[in-house]
Length: 192
Image (cartoon, rainbow, N blue to C red):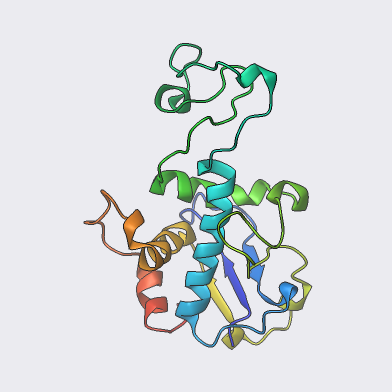
């Protein structure tokens, strides 16, 4: 049974000094019988968090959002040039399209998250309940290696490929890229 997924993001020279460790036991999930199923479910959980945190549109409740204009007029950020967000508070006023670069950047940025900033623990607007949790992983120490998937580097690329496997409709404009080598191994139900 796969119970933990531990990984580094970025290349060896640019990865963070500590690895990310996700566990599925925190919410009572017994574990996954195959590496592929475990890894795909982590990718789907991270996509659900990414969707809620980055892509989704929420009806604005701030007074400053009333009558907000299409951006490009009030700032220089790339986001402001492409999407309608409030000129004052920056709340998205329309749903953003999926971007593989933004998804991978989101995963790389998880190192800076606290338990509070990670958001709702158990569910998202698109996936309820979540399986994987990155906090209170003390059971990781002493876990047999057969219960762990470990990626030394570039986990964001493998997670992107696992997401494409589960949601092929997201793979637009990225069809020609060679799949990540770790994902190729996991897809065969082996640990990299």
